[in-house]
Length: 571
Ligand code: ADP
Ligand code: MG
Image (tube, rainbow, N blue to C red):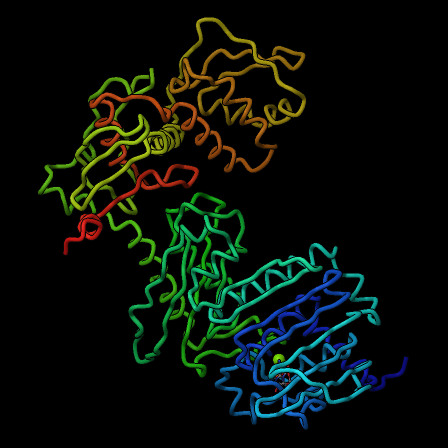
């Protein structure tokens, strides 16, 4: 085939492909336009996974009647005027590509009424060209309707996923913009069903409640944004980091709950996601990821948004400064959440802590196994102060007094944390205490359990289980970890075999340790003696991560002296 210039129509389709990859990209571009138009209310209606219909209605500035057609010309934009403007972009759009790109791959119509105009305008387009125009009444704002997306681009259509998947991408786009514009009221209707509705109150926490639910919202911590100036050598930039992060109690198994915004633009950045996760170092279990909404604002000239057609990638002038600022801001929010003084700081008031001294009791509470001296903890992230025990509540919680208020400690969660660290530590040192059974016990498994057991029998052996095949899906257990002796170790092993398939060894070891800790820990509802409570708290003080159980749930709640005074109306 000889070389020839591509038909302009083909060129526009290729360019459109970069901007309009799937229905969610159309939603993103239209919502960005509505936000750029200063709207306080945006509703999005979607049918058939976005292929049938996408309609975005706003109450923004609208498009003046003599500019409506022009808005659909390629590279027509009201947002930048010249090349210099590209260096300090403060709007979400600036390429003038979205409307023409969408019109190239779908049937589009628009009804818009600009500020100061008494009547609105209607324009419909077919194959990217104006087909019908008329005056039409409507209040100030714009409605763009997109139908039959990719109907004429079967290659694109083929790559779309099920309507449910496309809907989930759309819901995600709207959620992200709702999170970064809490003052805007968003309404998302999917096939007639209200999928998301935000109040537009201006308070991020209200939007978080709608997007992620009450449980997450109740566990969010505000990022201060206090320090606005960050300096590094000669380069000084003024940048602020605000938003909210989830406490380590509400982790997720993937990174899709980590949202990053730069000057209110939703971006993806592996580096900044890494900065956030770094701030959680030591607080999250392996494979767990935080919930976070991070708003970075900095002078527009210090960030280049013109890197990629979809505008989701940005380039910072001083990447390392932004990285540091994000990490520091998140870390501070997390530490302030648990502002428990370091043990050293209170040692003088409360006597020397028994940090490395062996615990003297010969048996742990609720357990039957002998106890050895606890391992020297790894660098504690947030150490626990020495606590004075006041009593037990509901046979489940220990009430204690610390240098800065009242502590309610969940006895099961706390004991789980202690045992989890102990088990992991003993396995590493190959010092798991084993208890031989007087007589071997037979243990039957189902076919699926057997597959997992075969794959992981060595891991179980490392933790003290001596299990050998007896044929016919029956196994002989000769010894178990001392911690589980006289506990329901068979139930624990069965649960473990059911909950997991043959997979990553590292995760499996973690799971075994968690499971052992959970099954041997003191239960809720179990009355403890003063000695037992004291022993548990002393061990908790020595834990590397005393504030969360291995499942990530909190082990304690603290009511600070200041809070107490406030509650009782004292200053
Ligand atoms: P860009 O957003 O990059 O400028 P678009 O193709 O998305 O390019 O839009 C072209 C122009 O149409 C915008 O610059 C803006 O002036 C106008 N426009 C589009 N949507 C709206 C809207 N919802 N409200 C007001 N003006 C709009
Ligand atoms: Mg745009």
